[in-house]
Amino acid sequence: AQAQGRRQPQPQQPQMPQAPGRRPARLPAPVKREVSENDRSRSKLRVYTEAEQDEIGIATLLGEYTEQGVNHGHPTYQKVLENHDEVNVFVYFWDTRDGSEFSGWWFGDSVGGQQVWSRSVETGKGKVPPSRGWRVPWDAECVDGLLIVEVIDNLAQPVSNG
Image (cartoon, rainbow, N blue to C red; front, side, top):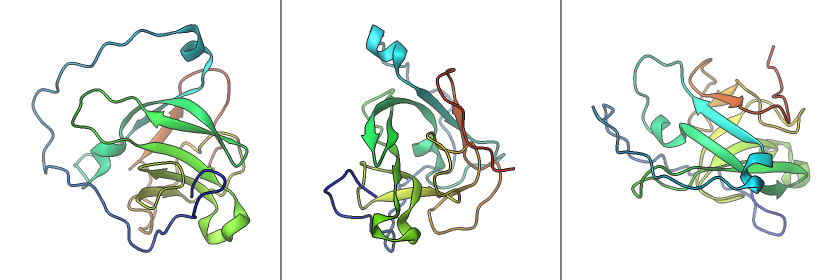
């Protein structure tokens, strides 16, 4: 899935980021940044897990995201990087223009990029990503609670998978 005018995702060959087997005992201090009025009006997401053990690559997706634009009529979100070692992660929607197998919400290294890590089982019933129903990696079975997306403002509400 990508921004309009770009190539469709190629989920046949996902590449999961390498993640250590354990979380570091102490995380680096977050990078301080000023919050503008524009930032305050944007929708924000918090992505977390209920998993009791580390899953390979899941830490790459966890964190806060801010709205960055629109793709296929839905907002796109970019992860707020807390240190320079993190990779860019985007949450975005892809419509049915390339077939229903590509439609839905995705986590990837760019909007519509070819490296994708996760895909929602929901196909876009709402304007924000669903809270549950994520496959990690994108072609795996959905494990409830492995990846949870929470809208952390009052501008929009997630689609319920219930």
